[in-house]
Image (tube, rainbow, N blue to C red):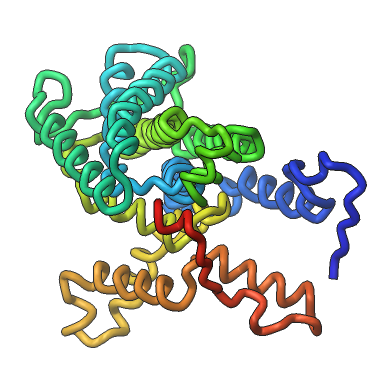
Length: 358
């Protein structure tokens, strides 16, 4: 059992709470740096996709998990970033400039989408984001002079001021650097006054407003940051595939992103990474087990959707805190044994007058 004695208020907002955090996260980072020499090209490509989806997951986690504003059309921001990156890269602009433009344009679109969040919430906000996603997908398909329409558009390899990142290893390290930078940025944002305002809005809008938090400003800011991160992920996604088309950013992609943060664990940065691992690893596991299943099941066209739905229902009913919530309980059990109590994580209902006015 570890006892952390706090002697300074700054300890509450430090990124590393104790030396164990520094050791394990440093070991994880060293393992990721050494990954190109430890695994083959196929699994390195899968790890690259995990990093890309983790960036998008961090954005959606900030919006849904920390601000309480759900978006069921988040793939639209992914598409805006991907097409912006493709257009500017094919024009010959350097990768950093094109990536910045992808993030800023996605953030601007996020502000426009965030405006309905000032008036609607819950299922109505979800419907508004779905409608926006359909509109954006139709724009991608019809604006053929820019997007290539349904035929899609090819994108060149990223160019860092004359250095072309054409190999999978080089692009992996680029994604790793961007992922680490985004993660540190999100962690620092969450421990700032802005991050605390996001959490206050999630817990109770009326209470947050009574404390002087400007709801419109912070809701719009949350949508903008979330959309910007999705745009950056979309830009990397476009470079990784080297070809994009409108059907890659449909409602199914949006549901996958939402599924990723829910199963990973809403309200935790770790949940974005665990959800990304689940999203990439699950199709691989299904493909490997198909041969061992009866033909009527293994060859069924909707097997993957069935598994996704069953897993989601299982987590919602049995573990609402997701994969990170389950790991947190296991870790707490190991740390507090033999003093662990079964009802330590029992969910309790709260009855507050402000909850009825949300």
